[in-house]
Length: 240
Image (tube, rainbow, N blue to C red; front, side):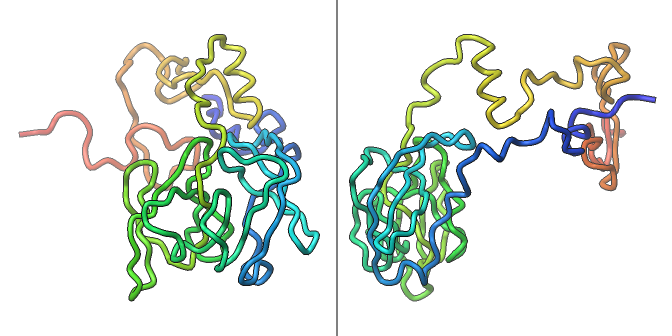
């Protein structure tokens, strides 16, 4: 009988694989539309490094003395003011609905649905572009960093600008230790060993007797053991 696979051990939630979420700063969600009103302003009082994400975080003190955390735009400084709401101006770091943003504007941290707090384009150095508006259908077309264009509700909010921390991938990880600590911050396993390089007892792909064997598994296979050909119609050469 073989050992449990690494994905199976990760799923059990042991301390070795559990995410250290107690060190993360928060979810970085937008405040509710009701709290923002037509327009609310806030001042950036601190820029923070969040181990749970690649981009820096800005702590903002709103006019009602409530503190919120937002993903910092490129070029923001402590002491600057940002606006939130439908009547906010189109400026760096301001948060407003997509329908109020002019075509060709760089945006990030887009809501997939109005009020969800921001789900898309949140990694450091990334940004999307507002392509066009379809007022009759209350729809806005946005070009993602992958160059794919998607349609979103015009009431979904976004932040104007580009996520800070760009150029992060340009600096190489010269030593393996740097990659180790990079993954350790989010409790990612490093280095990662392919199943084909393991022994037969450790993985279904392991063992050198038949290095190209890939077992077939059903859709009902437990998570973690779902490796190889998943419910294939056929394997190997086609019969004539």
